[in-house]
Image 1 (cartoon, helix red, strand yellow):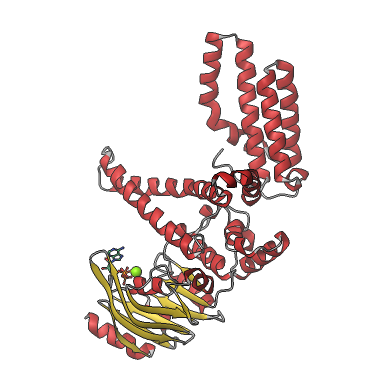
Image 2: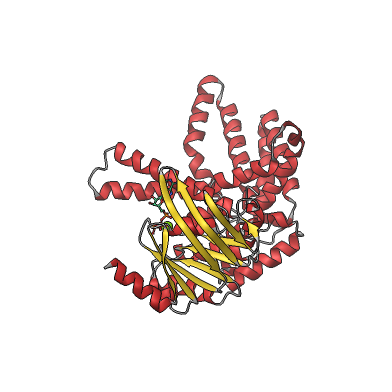
Length: 224
Length: 199
Ligand SMILES: Nc1ncnc2c1ncn2[C@@H]1O[C@H](COP(=O)(O)OP(=O)(O)OP(=O)(O)O)[C@@H](O)[C@H]1O
Ligand SMILES: [Mg+2]
């Protein structure tokens, strides 16, 4: 369970979030809103990449401001730009990089890396240089590298923005099959159709919080 | 050499320990540099050729490693011929080529992670003077990873510059390149934080 209590966030001279309250317990939560409305900032609050200026964010009772490291172990994060998320030179090494803190034996690491790469259709590329993958494959790799640590929550900040339709679909299908809580920020509204709940962010506040159909209807009307 | 990468395989060279290979590389290269004689170079060439064959690297791979070196070799050779004699020029160039080839062979048969592990172990004693071996190894990996990313950015910015018809403007290259590089660094920093690097 993620709880946001009276969350205010000031970045530089700007009040980016102005009083956000929400209990996020559903398995599939979408976040939509105009450019600059504060979606990415909201997402970054959920794993302690940003901490609120006022108010609090807790994940399973852990305060992101006090227990950032513990929260990040629970909450995986995938960004839009796959190139910036891949740290190691080859595919398998990048996934293994996520496991470096877990003090596993080499064989265990290799087994888990192989298993995840298989699930994401990247097994044949394990030893390839990551920069030779296509954009869609890179994003699959970024997702694989996060999921190998088995987080309880996955936050996605426009993971499909740089992808074509086929790869967008592929990521969406993979995500929808995951047995964990997902908070998905996106401008691809149709990806949120089967979700449990959709938040509409507008100018630093939650303007609507509803079923996908109702929330998206509200969002479309407010944008026209 | 920075861009030469691991080529998966099961040869004895692939299976040998990273530390052993690095040690052999260091000893061999130093011996050649120390000896600087035709017989030493001949022995070195035999050893490297045998290693290339054992690792199953095709002739084209050898050429790919040496091609970027050809101007440097020419320059070194010219310098040596002018100041010393042609025999020494030959030995020095051969030593250089062999060392580069041997180093490329190590990177081609060893996973980056294993090399970083060795580096990390070598750096352990520096912990006492405040050097964090994990950090150094990570930095090296990030640097290696940055090469293709930067190449991509340069290509992109170059294309944009050509599309706008200002291909001769240095500013139209450097300003967007700088901005994108900084943005990439920023994104990368955030992704690293999200993956728990600072925790
Ligand atoms: N570090 C910062 N310093 C100052 N202002 C910032 C900073 N980061 C973001 N902002 C501002 O905060 C506002 C919200 O940014 P945010 O990235 O959360 O928006 P967003 O909803 O994700 O937009 P987009 O759809 O374009 O991704 C923007 O106006 C942005 O300019
Ligand atoms: Mg955003």
